[in-house]
Image (cartoon, rainbow, N blue to C red; front, side):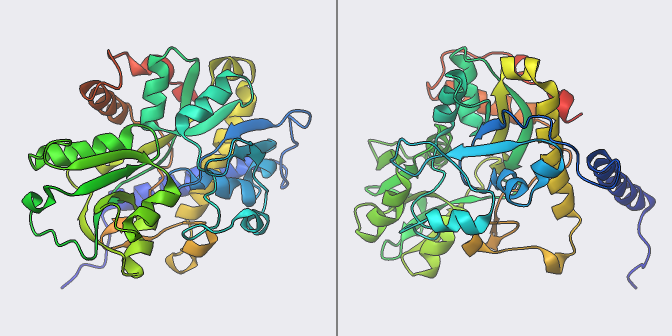
Amino acid sequence: MRKLYKKPHTYFVLLLFLAVVLFIGREFYPDGGKLEIINKDRPVRIGYFHGGRVNMMYRALIYDYFDEGGISVELYTRFLKEEELFKIPQTHEETNKMWKDDIEFGNPFGKMRGTEIVDLIVEGELDGGTIGESSFIASIHEGLPIVVVAMLGYDAVPGKAIIMRRDVEINSPDDLRGTTLISRRAGPGDAIFLREFLEEVNLVPGEDLTVIDQVDEDDTEKWLKEKTIDGGLYHLTTVRHLVLDGTAYVYQPMSWMDPALSHALLVFHKDYIQNHREEVKRVVDAYVKRIAYEKGLPEEQKDRSWDKGLMMEGEFQGMEIPSYDLPPRIRVDLLEEMQGLLYKYGEIDKTVDIRDFIDESFVE
């Protein structure tokens, strides 16, 4: 017979979680209303790339969590292959009007590389940004003055997969010989993940097969449909779309290494942190409060609107969109492992103590 009681530690975890949520709520609403905006004259400017690993920041913006927390925040991004930086609207309806001709969401939106965001932070056009783990490591190796203050989304289970064209039959790794595979335009992480897979199955890029890296978002689908390529490492939202329309099939989810290596970070210029600690604190607090809200929602109320770009939760063929921790502590172990991989593949020429570029006080 199944037992109807839960272990004591389960109750403790639940009570602790509720206490955190209530504490955060009290921080935001000390007198039953939202906090007064402390930076009306100069909002915090954050560079943003649109994707599952950072989408919680977007949801914090459009659902007014920053304003309610007493901090004015502006998210800035670009359209794919365009140079102009623009401010993301504060409602999803307004953002939808800007999208056009994309795979699912309109003109490829928010397609900024992490290294581009860091460059804008260093140049003073942005105060902080949402970047991937590899872009962060590459940047600190260049001596750029950025510091990570919180971990954003990460792949708790595979959120990427190697997919193949529907007419390309692959029954074993040996069948991949002679094919052409791609990784998408991003930091060096995706290219490394693909090469780690090929190393595991004893295939050498350039000898056994062709690998093309840094392929633009709009070309990843077009090339597959035009049969210019045979497959590659794709992200879940694109995988889902291409499988459902009959273009491709999933050959293998990213299970050959820890999927959590693929994660994103919230970073700021070190001088901005030094001079604006309260602003950074309120940004992180608002982000944490949105995580707490979503984790507290009943299952039936969770929004899985792929078409709306909210991506609160989603699953497809054993893969899932990124998860978010509460609190969003920075995973030094993942960053150190990723640093080792970047060194292995020649993206950096030495290793450094990553803790020197982390400020954990905002999430502790």
